Amino acid sequence: MLNRFLLLAAIAIVALVGVLVATTGLASTSYKDVPTGAWYAPYLDLDSISGYPDGTFRGEKLVTRAEFAKIIIAAINESPSGSPSSFTDVTSDYWARGYIERAKELRIIGGYADGTFKPTNYVTRQEAAKIIVLAKNIAPVAYRGEFSDVSSSMWSAQYIQAAKDAGIISGYPDGTFKPTGQTARMQAAKMVYVMIHGSDVTTTTTLPSTTTTTKLTTTTTIPKGSDSTIVYITATGTKYHRDGCRYLVKSKIAITLGEAKSQGYGPCSVCDPPQ
Picture 1: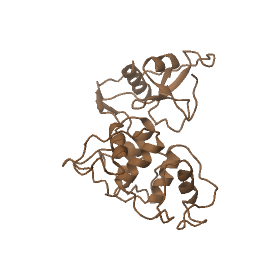
Picture 2: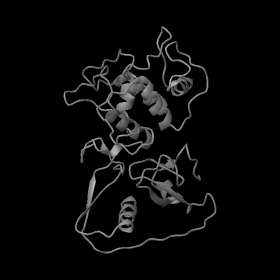
Picture 3: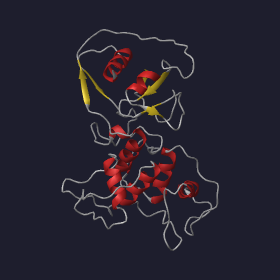
Picture 4: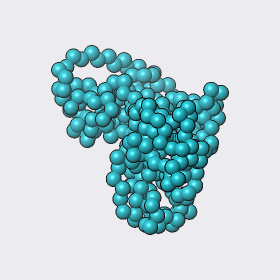
């Protein structure tokens, strides 16, 4: 059923000439420093992680704890807090104070025993794993020895395992995770994408050549909450949404509420679609 919707959507948009390659989940946003085919390109169409005024994304740039706090708060559709800073090294006029404070209020990010937050320190991979697991409300799980450099006695082990199980993080070809390694913007983009959509991007599909153009126009008035109510999904997500939800990527797919439920999609907790 999902493949049928993807095919119809592709035909409705363009007259296909030659061979059309349709890659679901690919970002429409382009940056002049992101090469065509870069592994992280599909994850860049997110409001929570934006580029720079000069048109670059700077994927290899490391992410600070303050920046990661802002990214996560934006990703879960929260607003900065207006409360005073809880940390001695975060001043009232610091640009990320509201994001840091809101993350603390939600128990997503904490500070250090000395009362500091260390906002300019780079966020480590194990810190990022824990922050996203908490932001996503994923239950920590017992560590199963996934990586050679992570032991069950580490404070982050259960969060790393939960993030691995959810597809949010992965290790390196040598079997390590590098928990104390720093997190680059391109890595953070993938983590947040999977956190929002519940799954990774899909693989490339090649459709046969055709010159046929089909215009699909549907106007439907249906009682609210009906199984035929139109909702929207993405090819890589697990939730259905109202039109205009911030979690919808450009490749949104119209589907009936009944079909969404029958295929295992659940309601988005942000836009509160019909149930």
